[in-house]
Image 1 (tube, helix red, strand yellow):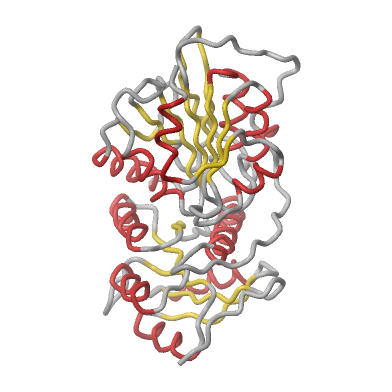
Image 2 (cartoon, one colour; image 1 turned 90 degrees about the horizontal axis):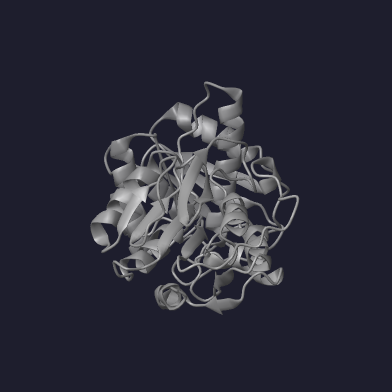
Length: 364
C-alpha cells in the first residue's frame, strides 16, 4: 500500500493528472511543471490506471477530468473520498453541461474546479497557468478527510488599484436604513456559501458575492443555489439592483463592483486584469463597498487560499463597515480570513454556522 504524503514545508507538491485526452494531459503537465513548487508525479488516461498508481504512491493533489471512458470522474471521486481522501481538483471544458456536473463534483468532495486550458491565445494560457497552479496549491492546503497541510507564502500580484483607484478624498457614507452584505470566498466556498444562503430568510439584506470560479460555472452555481434557497440567487449582470432577499454572484472571469445612486445599490460588471491573482477579485468588490456603502456595508471573508479580500476588508473596516472573518476551524483553507485577521480588518471572527445569524443581526 502507498504511503501518505508528508506535506513538509518546502517540499514540492506532487500532482497526479487524470484525463483521457493526451493533449490535455501534456498541457496540464507543462503548466504545472512550470511552477517551481509543483512536481507532476504522473499522468493517467482513466481512473483505473490512476487507482493502480495511487496504490504505489499517494499524490498530494489529483486533477481529475469529468468525462472519461470506463469510469466517469464523479464515480471515481466518490470512491476515492470513501476509501482514501485526497484533495481533488476537477477539470472540465467550459460547457453548460460540464458546469452542472462539476457542481455534483463539489458536493461529492472535490476541493475546486478549473477549466481545461485552451492554447489559442497567449494571454489566456498565461492566466490559465495562474489559475491552475493556484488551484492545485490551494487544494494541497485544504481540509480533506480531517487533514490539512501547512500554508505556503502568497506570491506577488496586482492590487485593486488596477481596476478601481483609491479615492482621493475620504467619502464617509451616511448611514441609511438599507444594508448591503458583501461576501468573498475561494477554495471551499461553494459548499460554505450554500450553507449560509440556504439558512437566510426572504427578508435578508441584499447580498453581493465574489466566489472564485471559472466562467460559465458561476451561472450554473447561481441557478443551483436559487433552487435550494428561499432567497433569489442569480449570476450578476451589469446594472443589476441589489435588493433585500436577493444575492448576486459575480460572473466568472469578470470583476464586480458595488455602485450607489441615492439610496439604491446596483452592481457594475467589468473586465480588467487579474487582481490579487483573480478575476473576479474580492479586493475589487470590497474596495467599491468601502467607497460607495461605507458604514451601510457588512463585509464577510470566508474560506480560501491567499489574501484576496484581506486588504479590501481592511478598507471596509476603515470606512465604518462591520467586518467578519470565518474562523479557522470551519474553513476548508484558512488563508484569506487569516490574512484579514492579521491586518486587523475583522471586527469579529465566527464559525460558518453563525454567519446567517450575523447577517440578520446587522440588518438595520
